[in-house]
Image 1 (spheres, helix red, strand yellow):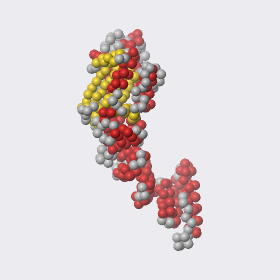
Image 2 (cartoon, helix red, strand yellow):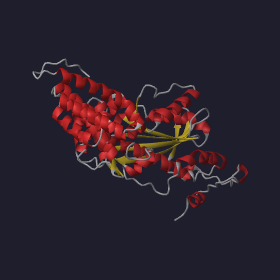
Image 3 (spheres, one colour):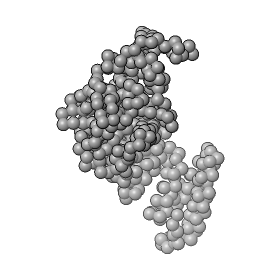
Image 4 (cartoon, helix red, strand yellow):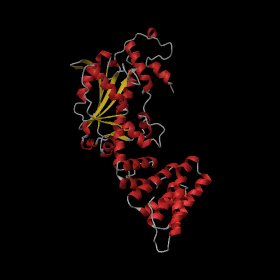
Length: 418
């Protein structure tokens, strides 16, 4: 199998300390001969554009190019609830390839990929600056392509792509057309959904491990892209740009397919499509935080019916138990607290002590759970756990002992909350 170095040499790319400007072989290869596209004319000049069209439902790994599921929860999570009323044609998906990976002054987006849904399919355009002087034309063409869109979807766009584009519009003496547009950055939602299961939540990793889409050897690693563009400007050999066009196109297609995939998971997590219990747990937590407590309880209950790592199971049991408590479903909460107490969880001992003290007025049972917790803490509790729990349990034990001493057998007592 050819190495990365072999593939780059085949594209005319030379790496290493010896790759100086004087040594680059002067062989001009225009981008028009490497990538299928056209030169487009704008009021701001000329820019190169590649374009592709995919039918609705076109497969991208296990995902598809469509927006078939409700975007309600994505919108609520992002604080942009209005997107629930947007048509698929009003969304744009955007990704940039730049001269620097950290942004900052002097960084430009030499390629911008953008996709949008149309009536019969998904249109992808890639605008490429053959030289920096084509930037005004690129910005003009991009603005025209996005003119009908009400929302932009990106991956890390809030921190990188859109601030960079805004700086370039300002540098060209123009107002930024996307300043007030709805922006959904999927990076942060992906972290919420998959941080407990996946070691990496980059777009490429999600493409492989969530959408099961494998890129071909044509792909160019992102870290190489800035230098390859500088080499192109010096040599005018566009052959290495083909891999960058592929990389950018795959990012856009993955972004669109991932949006639909996430929307489907959030819209109906109990339909069997969520194969991983850790993903189910993350969706349940998200529902709870958005205020959908009944839905969250159903999701977390289903989650407990699947294999889970011990730590994750403990977290789900705790979260679900308090959900049941807030919903007034005490029998379900008690069942989980007994289970958690058997697993030596201090919060469960405390909740059982509270229940028997205040709901049942059974001070003997409440004292039993309190003293059990204290014994557990003193036998195996870490310093931090003792610091957190011991004082409260000692205070509860003292109060319960006093109540038992005053108890007259007729239910007359001075019941204090806590």
